[in-house]
Length: 142
Image 1 (cartoon, rainbow, N blue to C red):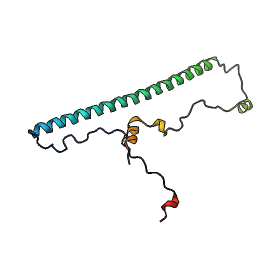
Image 2: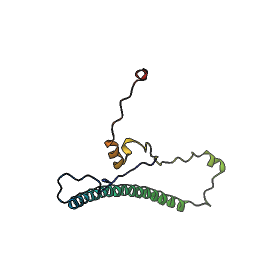
Image 3: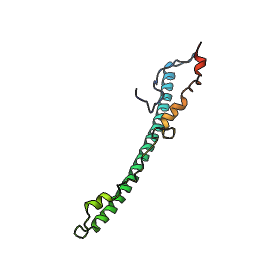
Image 4: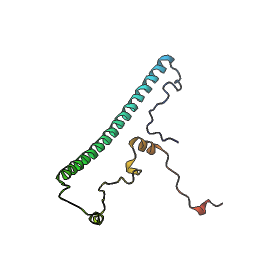
């Protein structure tokens, strides 16, 4: 079942009942439809702002990762140009005695946590009914 991330409300623009005593039904429906369209545009602009914020955050993260990678490549390029294969000979035993490579890359942890919930999903979560209080197993028996 897919998780709906963003909902634009109101979904149905022209549905609804007319109030009693309306002189012009067409004018009333037109005004209520126009008001619903304006509400939809407001919700759409809020979601657009949120989407662009997420894109900015992702692009900034990508930029920082690429800068870090470029620095590492530059350092390696300097080291490679300083090496001279005719001068240095390394035996197989020396290679086996070296410590293994250990990455300094930090792995993301707890990517599905309360702090990582996106704003639209958090808003939907906050609008939901609270779960019922847990019941003790002894109280379930009749």
